[in-house]
Amino acid sequence: MDAIINFINSQLSSIRVLDIIDVAVVAFVVYKLILLIKETRAEQLIKGIIALFVIAKVSGWLRLYTINWILENTMTLGMIAILIVFQPELRRVLEFIGRNNFFNKSILDIQDEDAKKVSSEIITAMSSLSRQKIGALLVLERKTGLNEIVETGTKLDALISSELLINIFIPNTPLHDGAVIIKGDKIKAAACFLPLTDSKLVSKELGTRHRAALGISEKSDSLTIIVSEETGAISITENGEITRYIDEDTLREILLEFYKKVNAGFLAEWRTDNERK
Image (cartoon, rainbow, N blue to C red):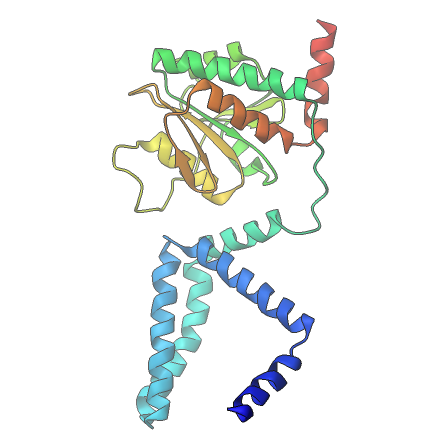
């Protein structure tokens, strides 16, 4: 027993602080990668690779040389195939790293008054559309640039107003079909196309508008607001998750929190313009 205790103590005494940090960083990276591939095609692929790896090792121990040779060469070619077939998932991982690296410039809190004004315009529009059961889809840009999405629609670069948002989504108008992209205090574009989610767990009662909102939230750090044309219910998506049946007070809290994380410079022009009125 003493020998066992002495062995454990000797091993523990050899552990450095850097070793603990090393293990913690690796564990964090693995955990984040698991979250990123969860419920995607890559999840099943990873399971298959692990199974092949285990079988290859077992065949090596049992000296089944032919099987071992085939599996090891298959896995080598498989790594090349992964880069080609699963390019969207790899891009998602790289975008996540880019959004969360330590080199991003710091984000300043905006004035509460500015955030309340912009949030009020959005809430007024969404509430009006909800009462009329007019479908709507807003994407609020955060760190991840959405220029590629903006290019698919009609550029506006207009200051946010409830009247403009309502008019955009009126049925049978040129810009009503698609998403509105918002950056800070500006409506950057309307009638934009969004990528649909690949998740198989999305409720069947959700239509294309909700699937598009989930899709863009999976590929960016944006906040998306949806109004259902069937029920008038307001929903939001963020980080690949949807929250349905949002009331005005909850939406106001969400928007105020969102704008607290947006650079103050985005709203400077909006504040100046309103001071002139």
